[in-house]
Length: 103
Image (cartoon, rainbow, N blue to C red; front, side):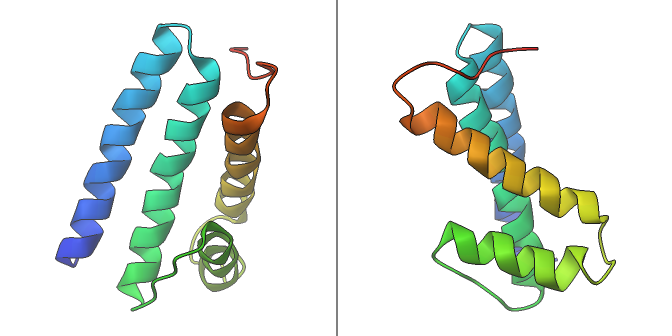
């Protein structure tokens, strides 16, 4: 595992901790954003292992799906979860009405 991959995984772990703190304190929309970033950093770490790096979120999500989920290297659901988290992140970050709630 490369140093960059280890740093991405540390950021993912820290994002999970932050997401929990946010949701526990009533900030579900912001928590979703941190949870998405945890998943995003893990996807970046996978791609880094293949020598791939992208500046756009859409490229990371698409390439993770193509190179890892659709090839069976990771369960296909992981890509779907990443896509759904990205959509929720956009809702939590950009919608003026707080529609993200804790189930």
